[in-house]
Length: 142
Image (cartoon, rainbow, N blue to C red):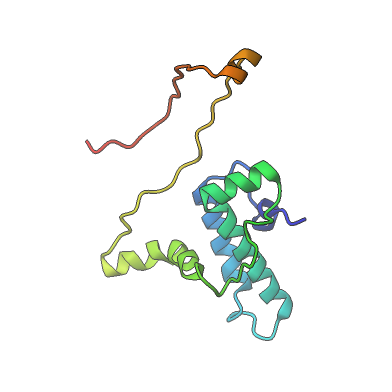
């Protein structure tokens, strides 16, 4: 079974920035243009693209973390198919955006919020309402 975190050389609690940084380094190292006629480098490049596309998407990453497998998530994945441009936009968008004077305006996605709540069997069977508070940081426009 493939361990996407191990493939990119990042910890399981790595931030989006950590994942992007690791991917950029590996993509530059194993890119087919830098390694012509090297099948092993090409296969590694495809594998790290698959890992990156899973770990950079919060929903796919949550499923991968939850179930320990990417089956169903990356089924039929082709690094040169749909969505490959998004991978390179994520990598090089910031870099080229500085030269064109254009910056990405979409917000950066954060981690999922999680809250463990204990309930009784009766509450599970018949339902109940509970108020919870989850502290979190938000960017404000001020």
